[in-house]
Length: 506
Ligand SMILES: O=C(O)[C@H](O)COP(=O)(O)O
Ligand SMILES: [Mn+2]
Ligand SMILES: [Mn+2]
Image 1 (cartoon, protein in one colour):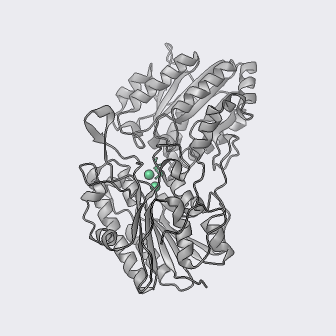
Image 2 (cartoon, helix red, strand yellow):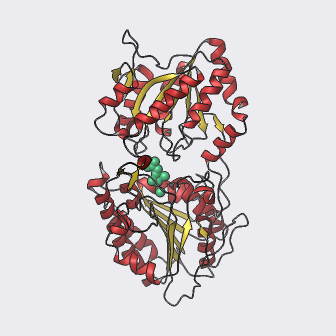
Image 3 (cartoon, protein in one colour):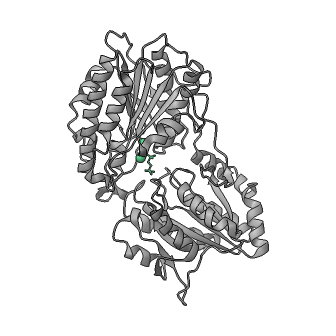
């Protein structure tokens, strides 16, 4: 058993803090329980973005790094930072995974295909990385570079795809090499729900030039009826109507997302079909694909955190989340370590599929709360860890009203969990992993505000609801997500892990 008090760690995904205002769906929601907690419980605002969590300065937070840092108890250099360092240091031009492939393409007259999200959302990719890759390819005299552009509209405001595709074309012009071969929305190319019908549509455009034939990128944008995220697969064709850049034997494919979770489904699909045909594969950063794809940049070690400490002390934890965030409370919280841990139980909540989250803002939160409360009633589980996904997942729709409702469903679930935890003699620690729904509008270049479903650099609330009779001190700021694991361990009566740089807040 433990020397301290058992508890519940509850991540409210996308729960950022900002002053009330027209963009703040969280403040607009009726959340009597959360309001009561914020007023009466020891609360601090924690930094969940930029260098505080291992991201580039000024970069919005995201679920992966948020849960990795919550688990590690220290900032972890994120893949975007490692890629930027490879570029800023000049090492990209002599990268040992990239340069032999470029030299072979130049020697054999074959093409390079760059596939990735084209925006500066900095969650999955940075379009500026394309610029650097084109420059290096030009230096190696690669004969042709075909860009398979994935449009965003989710990490950045909808309606920005035209500008980003224009930027991509300017990079190619500047490098004197490259051109857009296909354009497809991330809803198809970056599906991670396992819906291979979506993946296949993006893959067919890249592999066989199947899609809306257009003579130039602008035409593809005009075809777009459903927003940047759902741009139908479009294929740029030459004067004879032939696709300008399908993947052929001997070519090389380089995926330019630095985050794995949404591009790996497409990467595995393309690898399965094209590797047997002698196509070489690379990825900008390390991916969790089934296929072994050499990365240009290896990921940093995020281990030695909460999971390792709990295992070392034989402390059982139950991890609970809906499918959308299940990897976050298991794999990412454990420092991207997939190995099974005997003292962990993982509960993935699945239920009615929400084809469109804005029409079902409650998702399956009731089932998540039921599972948390059942685990909280067990006396062999000192720690329950759960993620309530609604505020972020519905926030990504950019739909203000649905997000306000998602926040209200979250409030009711938190009340149910707090009541069950109190009855079980447990504390509850609530924390956001990054901001999202507190900013549902963005004024692009000072213009009129438009819907925004992306993340923010705002701080997140960290609230401790003590168990009955539990004495806790008021937290001393400033705080970051790195303080969460040391706080959880301290509440359980366990010393922080040696590599943790955060410190107990309560
Ligand atoms: O992949 C997504 O849904 C968003 O681009 C990032 O959201 P997440 O970091 O919360 O997963
Ligand atoms: Mn998140
Ligand atoms: Mn998100």
